[in-house]
Image (cartoon, rainbow, N blue to C red; front, top):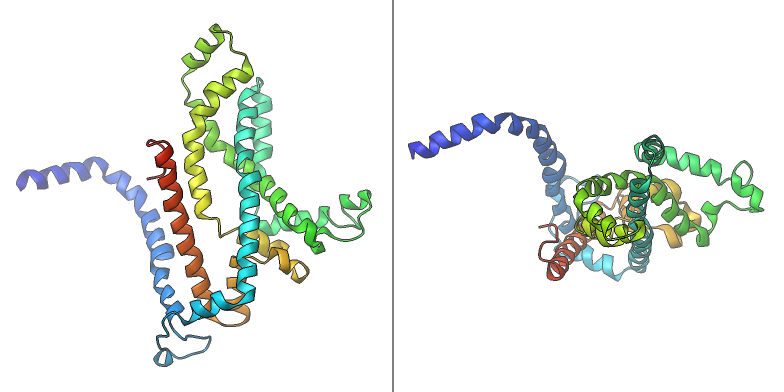
Length: 301
């Protein structure tokens, strides 16, 4: 027992500063991530805005039944899935392609210049980016006027979803290259030298060495992306959409926000959010299981 206590003291003496560094992050995680989970109980009560706590009663799965029976909810889920899968198909490969292109650049000055330009949109909030997009896409003052467009693309249902995907690539792909560039930098240079001796050209080295080396990183990031499939980017959609494109742009996040803040139906909004979180958790576990079935060393956990 004394040896155990002595070992623990030695361990904390050695790693104590690291635990102290991690402490603020742990506290923030508990306060802003775990404690708010108590509010999920609202999904099983009759709570509405302004109601006193003694008047709150348990109603079981009533709000979930109302949610799934409503026509609006099915449309919102469909919009969320379409936008999320479109982002997954077009946005997810973009950082991989950019990282490969940056890695192949010979000039370090040009590489750093391109990286700076590509990273910049990540540091701008969607509020700022939405203002830039509204200005650029204005038929009166923006570039679309030169192409003969008379109507704002933000009012066009056919243009709204492609606009979401393109703007998402613009904001996220540059920053996403950091992880892949780090994975590429970890590749053994001897592999490249051996391939060059065997006569492999640049495309063959990318295909047979670089891409397989970053596949595990890509699988982990893909699993995390799949877990957020029902998010679809609340900030982006909330800043860009309007009633004219509700039929194609209203997603679960905006539906929950509108139900809670505009209509005061907090219990129904909480049920919607809980449904979204449950589906996200299920998708993460399922995709991780499938990834490990394909490659036992792949997967998130």
